[in-house]
Image (tube, rainbow over all chains, first blue to last red; front, side, top):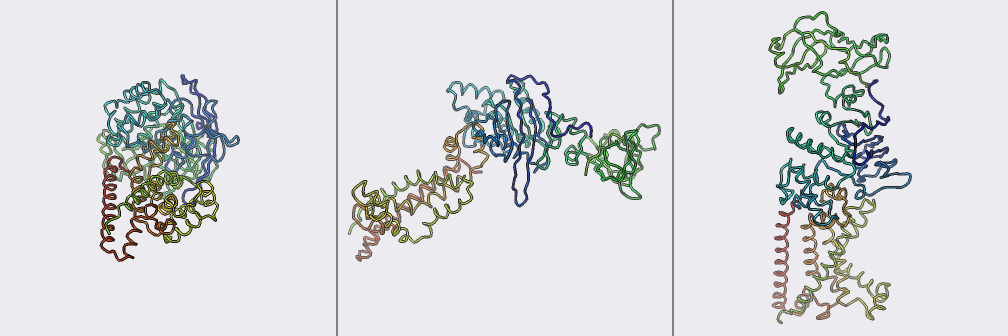
Length: 388
Length: 226
């Protein structure tokens, strides 16, 4: 895939102006993990420039261990971690800066609030070395910034989920960290609360401009937050780049599933047309299956690939359309219709089963009901090919 | 014979000294057991737990030999103070510490292990030293376990018999504890005196444990364990 940068390529600075002189967090390390009786190798190389970088991957991909290695909570077997020209870890020089001296802000998935302390004690915990008046004014400015100053004297064990998230963020940011690690800190929140906290966080980072590595497997969060994405799978960096580059043209099935392809099929290459930049693939199914025209990728006739098609990229017609630019026209019959929130999901039975998303207005004006005969229209470039 | 209050004073003094020392000694040992990743750690755990299964006379015998004039420890102590450790209050304290060690270390270690590791990690990322993390995070959350450990070692020392007899003998005012006094009274046929003394010991121990468990109940409300 030409629009995916190889995992090892180091991204250029996106040009973010930073008060700290734009120190990048650079990591290149490996760590052998033993979980149960299976061995697992975390082997990564990546660059986190100032601003938000999303660390994206399925559970078990090694995201938390990766963050732990950056924070010094876990020790890589081999490699280096550095922030600007500060070396945090180097196996060859036996450098391993202890966690307490790394100046890493780490917001845990479980938040890890000190429940036996008040909100204020939690927030002031990391700045105990400051003189009393400065400590108190810094703690209060953060409590204000995250709109939790009314909770100051409450026990951290007795506040709501959204409030806890804000306390955890304030407690971490008050220490003025030089880089920030966030392990799905907002996973448990409803969308509006999440959006408000994200906005507060973005506001904070406008003034600070430090590298932020943010773990999530929510596609919305990737697009809402991410200037960059690192995709981690099976302990390796699969791709890094902008959300658009990485998620809209996945080259591996994991990314495809993460990126939300509703339709994923095995396919065999039948004809290759390099001069047109296309090829023909057959998806096995009833009566010989479905033939699709797809973009050209490496791999000759007879090679097997996986095709991903988003349900929202497929058009539905109730009579055979003519004069279309789209190269794939597949007859089928509606098997079921299901309304999800504001979209309608249709299962269409052709020689294979496909999921199609459309609006309620489209369903009503076309008079779509189960059993109705339809034609599916799929553009060549809506077919995303992946290695198997 | 009326109740010999001197034996109660001595026993309480012994139990108090032993539990204070066990708190100071047991916390680092328990921390190490809870947080070390050393692969042979279980051997140390087994050694610490040994006094639970050993007959007190066996433990007392070895302590007696170790403190005696022919052992290096005994010789060092004699050169320092001019007398041996055996049959003294100090010797009794050492024997009792060893005997009650698991009753302090095990509740400590269990409550330290139960502290969410993420809290300890969070404390470290917030720049706290291991010592600060212990006093601000681990100890407050483990408060019920600490109280239990101290209370158990106190009560256990109050009621010990075999080790005291082996190491301390039966010297009034120096090493004669309540349990030995009761034994003596039974031997001498003074059942009434034995009964009174035993009843007082029973009440003291019950009140002590009731206070501790009552405190612990409140503590666990203040610091809920997850």
